[in-house]
Figure 1 (cartoon, rainbow, N blue to C red):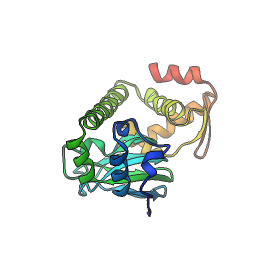
Figure 2 (tube, one colour; figure 1 turned 90 degrees about the vertical axis):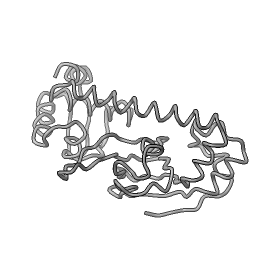
Figure 3 (cartoon, one colour; figure 1 turned 180 degrees about the vertical axis):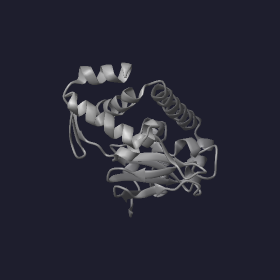
Length: 232
């Protein structure tokens, strides 16, 4: 991964500045800038590894990353997808000294890594910042739990339709996109067997719901895909 030291005033004018940092006065933003490094990760590179010590506060500027956890049997489960302006690894920040999951770029990505002690100092000295950060953690937790419950309630066809709708509506805002994840990763994300994912994608293509060419996806019939998401 390529690292780049950020100029001291960048946080004051950064277009990626998050609402969590909105409460910080200029002098604290300058301190924040001095304690951060801008990092670049290529697709497939690991940003943080499960069980590694938490040394930085990771803010995704652009790209996509998967949050994945490996169980005792060695099976990997993707627990979420991080998008631009997300604080990656936020759920581990206060509960553990190590990451509870790995963070891996699934597109070429850039992110800011802020020193852990700097964030803790801001939490202790700026009550509004602390409240904003806790609110963000709560929203992230609610989103992860809600999406997992939604997926668990769906039939197999509904799960595959769900993930296609997720990438179309929440990530790319388009009916045409390149899937950033493999069939195996889709299976890990929606808790299915790979062969079932492949079979259902083929059925959607046969039924003219989607067009598939390698990683390229085009949704041809949004209504049918939405129906499949709800009814399987």
